[in-house]
Image (tube, rainbow, N blue to C red):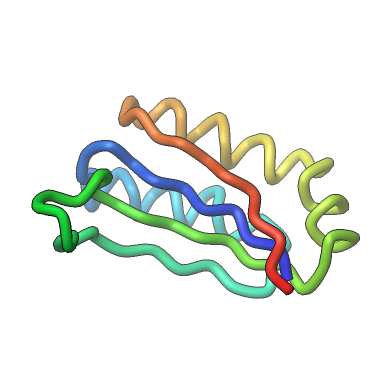
Length: 93
């Protein structure tokens, strides 16, 4: 399985994020997409405020999606929300 983990530094605006989901995320080919608010950490405050993760069955499926216009458009729209974030690709055994 391959995941892309997106960590937002600040909470997202609910209405703007819903628009991002409806207009962009739903068009990205993936096995699953999840998102939610960070609520704590064992070391005081969480390092990020909002979390999103895409999942693909394997590297081949991820690479096919990563080359798509829909994937690029989703990333561009995420940047246009104006909230600093990181995105990390993870391969799980």
